[in-house]
Length: 217
Image 1 (cartoon, one colour):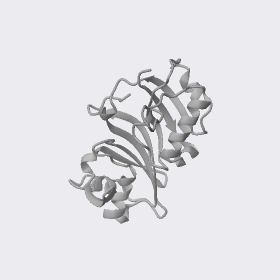
Image 2 (cartoon, one colour):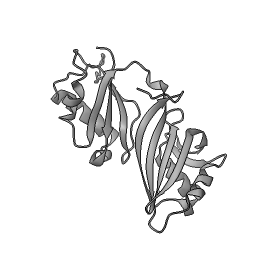
Image 3 (tube, helix red, strand yellow):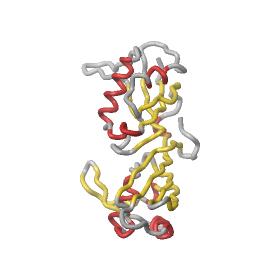
Image 4 (spheres, helix red, strand yellow):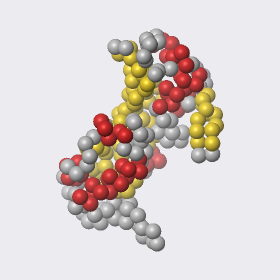
């Protein structure tokens, strides 16, 4: 079969499943649902399955995307229910469809987050002023070690709102080239303006877009 794509959510306790464990979980789910994945050829064949944007442990998402290939034709309308029935709590398949767009076209992510403070929240205006800086250069770990990077070009928009004793964050950030982990939104505060930094931050991916800000599927 041609390449297919799943859209699924990963919430609740499932946010603590690592990327590698999620891949194994998905492969077992296909087998339990009676769906045979297609394998690559060669000396070390592997199932043709890949998640477009690996999700950090502890981050939730309602818009995860996974490409896969099956050995036989199947009813895509029934596939989400078949897979969800054999997946752990917190992982739910929303839809399955032919993958017509290249993964490189996925450019932006909408995320929502909560900044939690143990000893009083800062003013929203102070947070807004920080992210209006022309540059926000932070230290970031890479495969080659630690380097400096300006995260401003990776933030298309960001807004804050007081929510009880916490601060709600709504942002649109770069998904690829460069990739911005939403945890770095709080990390930048910890590095450059610790008096505004939250004691804890959590994020959820909400939606994916292409470079023209059209919803990506």
